[in-house]
Image (cartoon, rainbow, N blue to C red; front, side, top):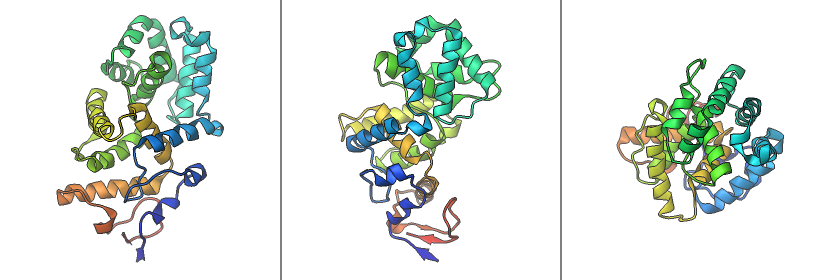
Length: 266
């Protein structure tokens, strides 16, 4: 049996750039959602050129002066393909083409809905006719990035597996309902939950934005299987106990994915 005192475990799968950054962690070794960490996360994302993280924004800025309404269907396809590849969505090329063609053919409506906080836009994009799978992750990222780049607004958030995996933990930490099934939610429902968390964080951190929050969560946990698994275990144990728990009182009696032991006590 292996006994580990937090936050020692956080170094097992943490990428080098995150390990060397001076991020602030909470009592469980999870990244705190604050303005300090948001600044660091933004800098890490900009510096991650080897992952192609900056390519979609660079393409947007350099194409038609950032005027999306002037894009050709091919240019839209290239932009969405870069968003997909830089975020590792593994979206089939045929689906990228369908999304690009839809936005091109409905540009005025798309921009109006994007600028009016219409969350049904993401659900509509994710379920377009002809798609070989639901594209809720890519659809949310298209809207989240484009609203920032075009309008500098803060209405849409990323809805992908990384965010969904970690959101319940942060809901619990801020005293909100954390017994939620995000996988089955529409984007409209997801954003209701996300905005509740954003409001709770802003009560303590007035300068933080929704985009900052999803930047922190997405970038710091996107390849960190250990912390993600432990956060999920804390939430599951808390739901069973009907009260929030922490690593100081949590015993995980089953294997944790990515961790080299069968029994772990914190």
